[in-house]
Amino acid sequence: MYGTSLATAVIMVSGMAVSGTAAASQGSWLTVGEAAFAQLKLGGHKVTIRANQLAAGGAENLYLIEVRTRDLPSIAATLHRKLKHCGGFMFHASEAQARVALAGGALRAVPLSTRPSYVLANQALVTPILAQMDEQQIAATIIRLSGFVNRYYSSAHGAQAADWISTTWAALAAGHGNMAVTQFDHAGYAQRSVIATITGSDKASEVIVLGAHLDSISLSAERAQAPAPGADDDASGVAVLTEVLRVLVQADYRPRRTIKLIAYAAEEVGLRGSQDIAREFKRNKVDVVGVLQLDMTNFKGSSKDIYLISDYTDGEQNRFLEKLIAAYLPTVNIGSDRCGYACSDHAAWSALGYATSMPFESTLAQDNPSIHSKNDTYANSGAQAAHALKFARMAAAYAVELGTDSP
Ligand code: BES
Ligand code: ZN
Image (cartoon, rainbow, N blue to C red; front, side, top):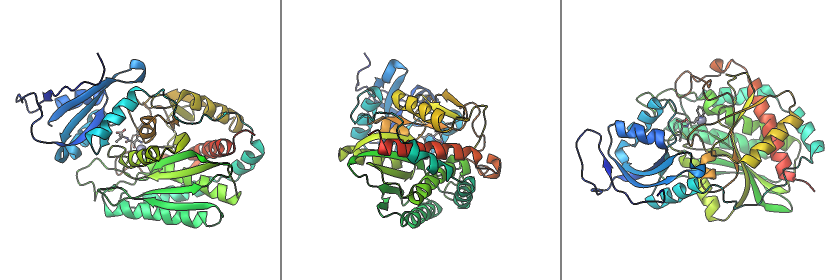
């Protein structure tokens, strides 16, 4: 009943009935959950259903839809506005790629990579590294990144911000003999993702990914020009990665597995950067054993400190994170919540079967009200980086425990 079907119902929008089979090519494919799908039905765009499938666990129906490429900006705006957040649409460059994502969303249980032991066995390495981590370093990166007019994926500012991260990471990495920083090109826009790699020793083929998105967005009209400081969303995640990078270099840390820190381009427009990267890794059969996404780490909106997002993530790895926090950050309180849709780059990896986690700064109901506007500033995160520091320590502990693993 819920298998992939080839329905070609056309939902129309402006009220006019339009015939059942797809007419002229529309050119862009999205996968959406039920909430976004319902919203699009009410919206003003041509939407053709190409397939649908029940999500893993039967939680909801997922739809593969085709829309007109020229409608994409207004569809994104509608979803962002109407669903508060955007209801988890994922952009795909072809129908074939969209079908892979749809199937991955439905069959997420498939383990296709090595499972780590998830045993904590490296306290002697981890503890001194965590002690080196510094709130002021994180604050400085947030302030620097939010100083770009915006980091919109297709604006010149957005490309410059990505280059700044690349240059900054390369300068830090130079202090370590075995770390390389590269830029990852994406088709169709100038903003490049940035990847810092520490190659592992005896288990180099097994890869740990820590990520954050480097782009920002303002939902106001002229996006390429509009101020979008994105201090919390997601300079705070990139700042966490930068601090992890700094202390790993300072400790001259040599992992057994390969560790990759990734600042993704173009998250805000449908997880585009992370999907390109996850697909390339999958195509190259890279054995990614764990993915940690850091998206919004510095606004303390709720009573607990770190909320583990339970959907589009891996239960076993989430339990490992709880154990890690209890051991290394005993004063940090853990909660859990769910996004309800593919809310950030971890979902690009989980769609391909990789084990992901997404620790979040607050409950969803109490998240930072300033995101996606000119008000997402360091001041509006309370002019502090103490909250992000908890995430940075958790991320460093994650990198080193999985990077070294048990004997
Ligand atoms: N950081 C947000 C996701 C988020 C916001 C999670 C608030 C939890 C609470 C992310 O950058 C974002 O805006 N994502 C989009 C979806 C994406 C597929 C374009 C969103 O939520 O609208
Ligand atoms: Zn974000």
